[in-house]
Image (cartoon, rainbow, N blue to C red; front, top):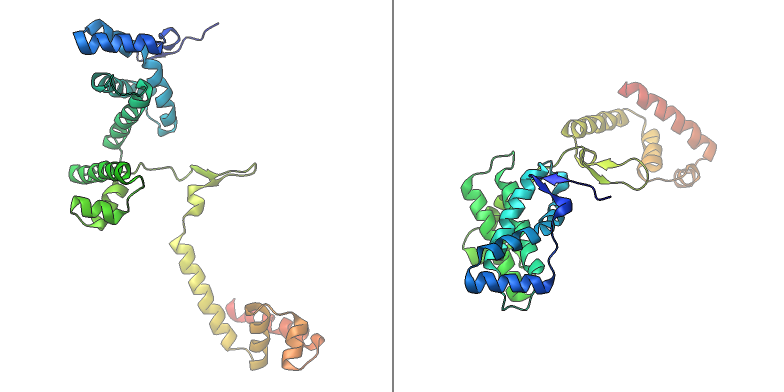
Length: 258
């Protein structure tokens, strides 16, 4: 039993599938005779392609109907601009156009408002990147893109950062069978850094109040990671004495800090 799923009023279970031979026949009719019926059949026959593309954007929180409609705009553009004389499958040509249309829609509807000039700079940089990549068969550097456009590298970096999609602090970035690590887990807390800095100052001041030998023992034990036996050999006392002096020093240190 075929499940009926409707998107934008289209029953996806009833969408036709065109063979390559039929596709070429319809494109010839469209391009040579301007057959509007052939154009409509090409659109209907490739809606499944749009459905497969929009699955890539399921996690963006956008309504599926909206993504489908925008993807259809990209599909129509691909149909109207496809060159039948080129030895390339239509799907190979159409998918990047559909993806590009959806990405433009997502950027333009970004909840963080970005000025038109910044978006234009970012889009020009992305187009230049694609052009130079195709020309040199390798991805260009930011300096090469900036030189090609005649603008500063900092301006390009700022523009590209501005059009990035925002992500949730609770989006998982890693999970390996256990508890996931979220974005927020990777963000430092300035307040915690300040607290750590204050703690370090307190420890340093408390250390200065200890006897010289106690300071030496704690430095060797906890800053250099030596064992009590190694400390005993270095300062010329027994391991038992090191243990006793270390314990007393830690107790005094705690008392000074608290």
